Picture 1 (cartoon, rainbow, N blue to C red):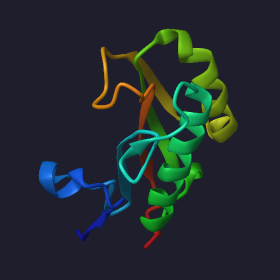
Picture 2 (cartoon, rainbow, N blue to C red):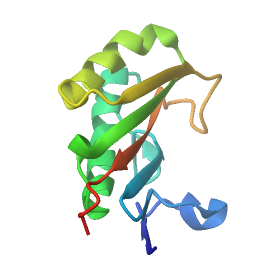
Picture 3 (spheres, rainbow, N blue to C red):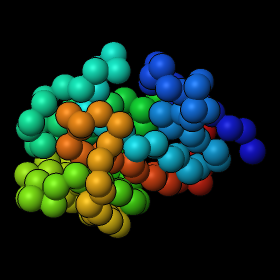
Length: 131
């Protein structure tokens, strides 16, 4: 099976050894994604805006791998403050309301940048006939 790597251009990709997304066969896994542009946090202090920025990045990675949000079967949402659950959840619902993937939401102690409030990863499954 072929393995397609999708890069986001993050300076950490080569240092840590990861890809924004990986497609193997009809499976696409998107790494934990934060609200950053050029390695710098965006939408500081606004969990909903950070979530929208994250889904823009995830959507682009899925598209590059030949998938879309409709193919997503699982999401994992990591929050530094569970008080942000509703704000982040509303944006998650805007993206996945009719798709309704399996979801896990967890609180973590911190991220690499203290300005990041949320990190999201997704897994997608494409139809078997998809290239």
